[in-house]
Length: 236
Image (cartoon, rainbow, N blue to C red; front, side, top):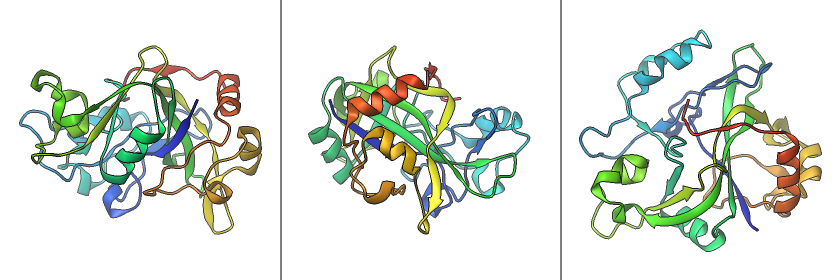
């Protein structure tokens, strides 16, 4: 069994939308806010940030003005249990993962209760069912992943991972895993010990071309099961 830890969701970088989705640090309730879409997509498949208005209202916050007219790169798409990537990261997904392996998704969230540090937390997971090239997804099914929604160039190798139904989805309540230490956000030391370690030095939590893998996936899975996560097949 193999497992990868993959960072997703809006963040403070320009490519991440310069904003963090909200979380209630007391309850673990959160909103999944995706990064902006930077490519052209097929007509009618645009995912507007404005659709999050009612979701964000639960947290008594509004979308920032610079996102209101933009579209989301909704990836992963927990409603359809798909996750896409391209380039080096797609190559790693294909080479490292097989059926029944795991992708664990985490995001950097902003605590609406006023905590000064970001809340780095697990927001979902996939048990891998299979892989498919985005370009090979039939036209009737294109609206199931951000990469198949895109108007792809000839020969594009964008990869889509499909999660196994019943074992994959968005967490109803996120699981905080991060802390700020040694001048960076990292997985809490206690959790690194419980999980059996990660392939990145000292649990470093940042977007990277190299996807961190769990050194002892069965040990992580035992920890995860103790948290009794509730998975939903929905984005929010």
